[in-house]
Image (cartoon, rainbow, N blue to C red; front, top):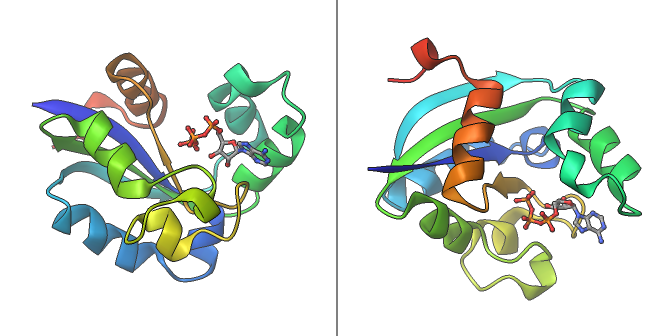
Length: 137
Ligand code: ATP
């Protein structure tokens, strides 16, 4: 079965929404293969979002992502990448569909509560970035 990588970002952990988001993940039909609370270092955030390094928001993004604890998760489901992106909604909560996690919990385009991989290939890379194989059930 397919896998994706998910993150509950510092804004959502700080505002106490992590528990509700984990319940939402399970209700959406995912099996959680790995989960941990971690504060991402600035260097890790820079590497994780390297693809955006030429974008104007990069500095703000990596500072925000390393500003407090996040919950990182490895999720399993049929079509895990597509199902998770559908479950979280559009990057900007103003454009996210009703009932999606970003519609429910995101503050704005930058502080947008959750992350999801955008391809099966990146899901494998991102899971390996945060989890040793022995940490996954
Ligand atoms: P993610 O990769 O976090 O799941 P995404 O794939 O929906 O998000 P991307 O376009 O890959 O969106 O952008 C990565 C992240 O960069 C966004 O989730 C958001 O936190 C931040 N970001 C994107 N655009 C902006 C912007 N214009 N201003 C501030 N932050 C932004």
